[in-house]
Amino acid sequence: MLPGLDRQTLSALADGMLAPRFQERLDELLTLNESGTLDAVEQEELDRLLDRIDQINLVKARAAYTLQKLFDIATSA
Image (cartoon, rainbow, N blue to C red; front, side):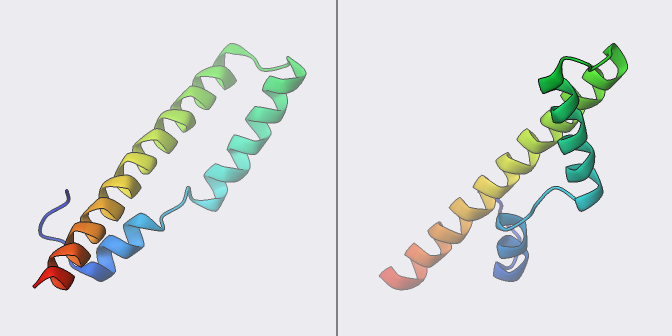
């Protein structure tokens, strides 16, 4: 859970996305990877972006879980 955050903040986190400039770069790197033309530096950059996406997804899941628990508490009272 993510305690101490209000519902609006939790909703924003649950709906969060990769910033557009990072998404564009990710798309470019994935295209290069598919074509087999990704160099070592680009591979490291792709790995970092994929790690960032994993972190975002974890926060999104925790925010969604916390919102659900808050909803469950509110409706059971």
